[in-house]
Image (cartoon, rainbow, N blue to C red; front, top):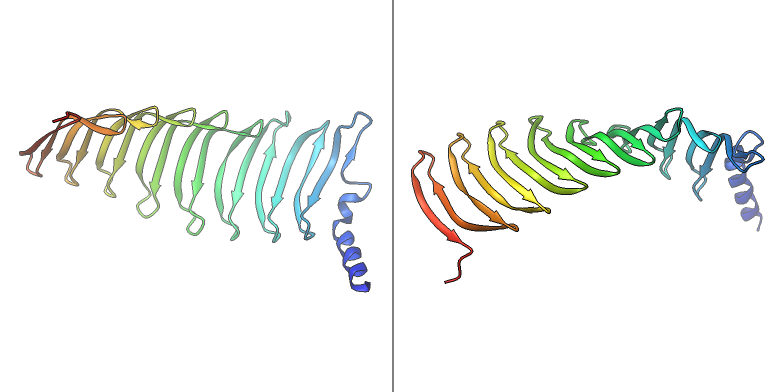
Length: 225
């Protein structure tokens, strides 16, 4: 029983700053004001920040259950827009971008948690990928794939690249599936294949070439025998 009492007392001691008169205050209208913080059940701090008239203001800091800094949000005066940085447990930045009303907006950049190198850049609108998404090869720091999105769905051009930076494949997406003309290339930039897709499947006539540009195969897809 004594051990339990000491444990509870110790836990209260850890979280007591948030229950002091300087933290977690509301005004007569019930709006959060001033410094606020919260804790995990194990006593580690979950977040800390300040409110003004129930809106976030300044920098908020978020932690994991081991006490590592997980993310920061720096809010503007409106309390609706925040510049975010997200961290790996080793302290490296793994993401950065803007939140508007708690939804991703504009360009977001993502990084490898070990090397810190750029691995992904995405355009966002109202919390969904909207615009270009570009995947980077962290070894070469070149674009490996780029694709267009509308409201989180692949819609439009898609291109993949060799490590050299030369084009490997280009196609079109519609409703999250490959639709329309497509081409693939050899590493020396020569055309390898060309044809069309319909709902993710090859359709119609496809042509295959060798690296010298000679037509070697012609196949027809989507025709029942």
